[in-house]
Length: 368
Image (cartoon, rainbow, N blue to C red; front, top):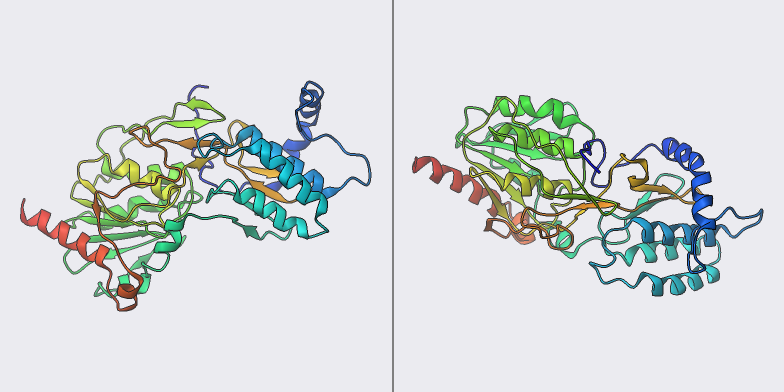
């Protein structure tokens, strides 16, 4: 499909509903042509007469969208055809809002932490999340982290990151958001403020999705030559992404990336890319395993999809592989050094992962 810029929207980020609605209207003719060309076993949605069952239409649209674009049905050994009959029956039996549970359950069959549906009021519901996320949900606490500093951390204007210098002259960056383009504008200032430290700890525990341009904004300050992305597939096609280009200021001292089971999606992509650099070491526990992605280009690869009732579902249309060809999905990223925090230690004000990172960088500097 050639080179494309996927930086606008990846990893489950929202799109404007108006744009999607206009897009759906424009594609109406194409949908009809597709429907009339289907074989008898095809279940594509058609324009229903007045008085059609809205729940059944939403079910059909959901089933078809997943069948058409979701990349992991085979990988996860999901018999999607068999599930059609199960959930069609449940939909027919559902009364009114009971269908919300049906929709939740059919999406949960994908066992994908990116998948969600959005009610008309805007509430997003995620039917499934990986067990590693819940295991580590309470093994990180920003207030415990702050106890290791003798001064206040600086929070960026967007609130997407906070940073400071530990007493050992080690820089610390907590990334709270990979969304929008905040890091593109703010990360150079962060690195510049930490340029004279003996090392940097990048904390991306407890992170979820975001965009590739923010991943690139982080990685670009730790490389001196262009760095290739891991392989990306969109709608079953391999997509060539322009390499990450180095940017100033360049940081050359040791870097530790802190991860755990709640590190997910864009946080995992960022970790995997940084791990390719000799100065970077990943410390913590295995990440959550969220590999699905989507893109606004081409439009049919958008993750958000409007159902006939106006509800919105997010279904990923592509995915990244790790550099070794293994999937991110379900597998996650193993740290270079496994250090496990417990919720009890966190409750007692101890962050072993952070402590190890400090000791590691201190020892690296002593051995220079």
